[in-house]
Length: 147
Length: 147
Image (cartoon, rainbow over all chains, first blue to last red; front, top):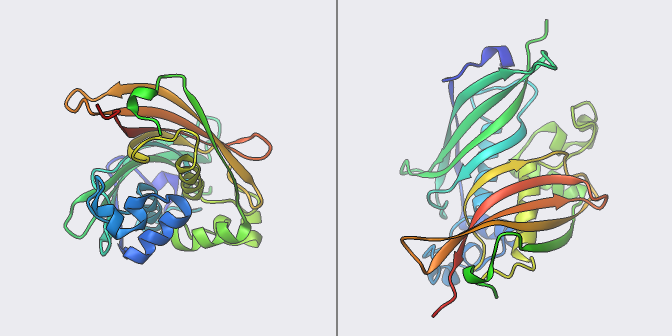
């Protein structure tokens, strides 16, 4: 378990792997992003994606899953204060095996509440070919080490 | 159906409603964000959230669902080029009925590819009490009207 005090800019952590199936891609799309390129392998061929592609929000959810199980070991869990940016250089595809690399960009103690701080963390999500499918920078609430 | 040419800064669209159940909140968390405040109503009471709360990524997914069904009617579908920011001022709760308000912030035609452009859109997600649960600004790919 690591507290706010235990993190510094430049710290790196990892998470995953997590495999993604076409059934899961289509099930996610059915509920959250019902568009042909996420729903139907045949229809997807005729689109920009040229084949079934996971919703970016699905990739974001899978990334969160890997953050929760990551080596960062943040005390109190992973509570997002907000996201600074997300980019999806290429989509997640059926059969991809994803992993994450996390890097602490900044650790800022709260002035109002010195018992907590905010960690700005960039999380890069890669597939089995080490191609980047998502880059996200987000701010996580981190409790300070109890006195 | 609206093409890039049909959008201008200041245009507004709406989407929803969409109801969220505690069963769905827990099912989402099981796969994507397995933390006590998203998984277990009892355990959630003892946390910062003081009760079961949807993952922010779940709110983001539900927002995408409402964007796809929104009055924007974007030709070619909703393809995110990236996200500029997401904030979650408060969590989505079991029984919430969500809706969205979208506003075009900027419409920028591609210099390299004049047959398409990018729409920067701020989407605000609100609950049945008109409380904001998410504010997101994202960039959507938009095809120009065919000649």
